[in-house]
Length: 303
Image (cartoon, rainbow, N blue to C red; front, side):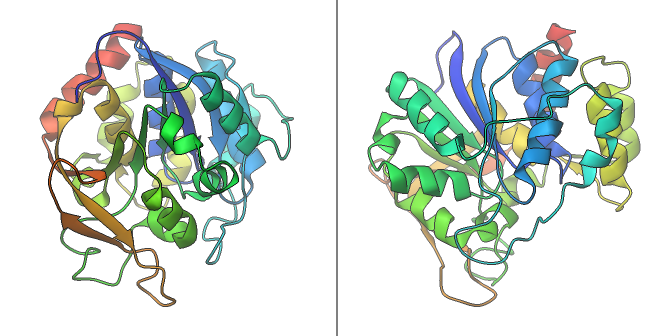
């Protein structure tokens, strides 16, 4: 299903401030003329400081987007993201410093109910907020236009052949299970086995965005991230980009179940291919060159 021309109403749920791809994804959405970003909720440890990182990026492009800190602790399992490394650079960037507390789930519920059948919820972190939302109001999934998640791993290491869950899925296994059990008209997962194909080395990343005013805070935050020797993998931007061009990935339909048994495999996503009536849509392939062409077209057109 290719989303037709026009602006797409979207809510973003993010653990921004740990991996740099969340900041890249948010900037992409802010610059995308087809994205009507209605609000941002944050998840994982120090959710309020994550909101500050999101605010700095929004303000760097002259946007005031509603931002609500969400759940800091998972429904199940330990908190693996207790702090926000990139927040150490916040003093360099204008950002809001106070936020409504305890209102993120109600904000999501209220906004989705206001626009039934029109909103895509994009989750690019642990699924705690989504799990709480769908439990609080079981009608909400049916009111979404779509649920798009950077979540899971469906082939290779981390699938049925391994006990290692993907980071977001394993960050809150109970919430992940709730999300996959919820019926949504478009229930799409872009997993680690596909997103790990779109990467840039630190030097390439910094060179690619050095001339972009909009990416200045992202480049600053990326210096913190790159200290650990990571490459920049565009997990979240690829998931977001499929909302505006779903030919960037090849999808198959089937059913995803979540391993919630205690142990190392808790949070593992188990994929069973199916037919057109199956509830879940999973990315099985992507073309990195086409993705980067799309990405540069969006951010270049906004400069």
